[in-house]
Image 1 (cartoon, one colour):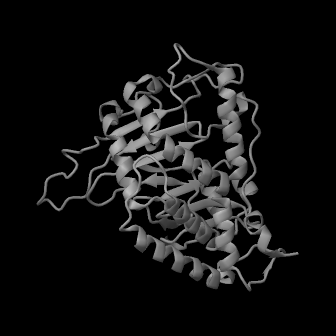
Image 2: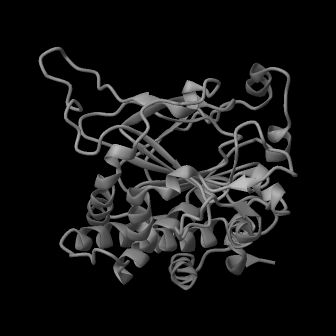
Length: 357
């Protein structure tokens, strides 16, 4: 994957002169970005007729991912925020909007990155990185989970913002609820190989597997989706290398820390310590600050963001069902395992081979 992205960028940036003295702006990368978009559009057209293997990732899919990532690198939206200052707690949420104004970029639909003022990547927006045929294959894998979905939070104090609620489309009064007889059900399933029990998050507290990993349907789902998760790990390696390294170390270390009663026997395929399966659920915006921007969220989209810093949600959509995966790290678990907070990926690292010294 890394070699493919490097090759695409080398070709696209041929003849370009990029300086290391400042963050490179979107306008400076227009021609290279158009070259990559042309390749991406052509490949997507060819792939419409391609039959994909049902349990492995094809080379064409890998090339598609590389083109989407390369375009995102060449399509930076730069804020005026300093992410270190932005992350500092403030007494009132309104204070952040006072000092960190919304960029107001409107609607973004092409692969892009969002950077702070120093070029640190806060968001990777990767629409179309999963082709429609693969989305169809993955959807089928989720059918056995329907009866295991939790439709409302069992924790009395858990915010309804985070758990969400059943999606109810806006109807015109002449049609029945299109989700009344859903194929995939509705609700969410929280899965983790390492989680604290509720109200026990001190460094000396024990860590357990989530109870869902003992469900036979979840075991089968993890097995069936492992090939895709392993491929998504390789994407994380490329776009968030330091975070991916910490994630790998944490998953490797869990064998020494996690208490299982009895062991589930499930092999965890992700570098992330949590995967929530969210089916036909809406979630309200949670977290304080917002970019004032709408990212198109069509099937096959991946978004990497710092969930503690930026507001995010799953709003209403039009007809049809929606399955989303929320992959996340847990600071408390990493602290328990002795893992340090990773650095943000920087633009200069992504383009280091192409910068003038």
